[in-house]
Image 1 (tube, one colour):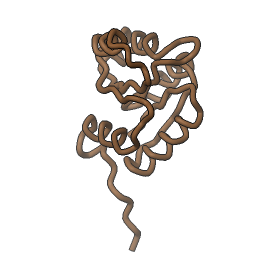
Image 2: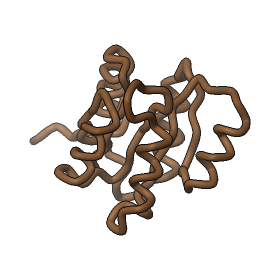
Image 3: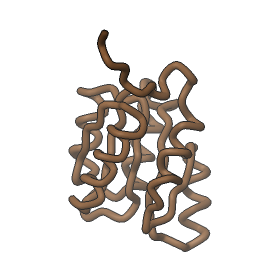
Image 4: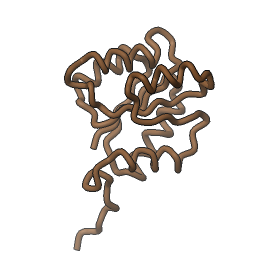
Length: 132
């Protein structure tokens, strides 16, 4: 399982990288902006994207729009991360087909649980077993 974390805030990316690696046992790649994120989507083929909406340059709405126009990413699960409270923004995200919405500041247990609900049972990560 590979997750792409897209957020311009480095501490948020670090927290999510650790959380997802430890709790879900998945590989995490990250991007600090929308342009890098789109490049990584094509190079890394993530199974899920955690996407901040408020970023300089190309914001999360633009990234989401681009992902939904590409045939190979139309069904890619995207969970939006934001402190945005404007209902029109939330509606725009839902109209673009987001898989979930997490409000900042993030609650680590909510992040892991929301992602678990989107994953097939065999991709949810099992605790590592000790070799005999």
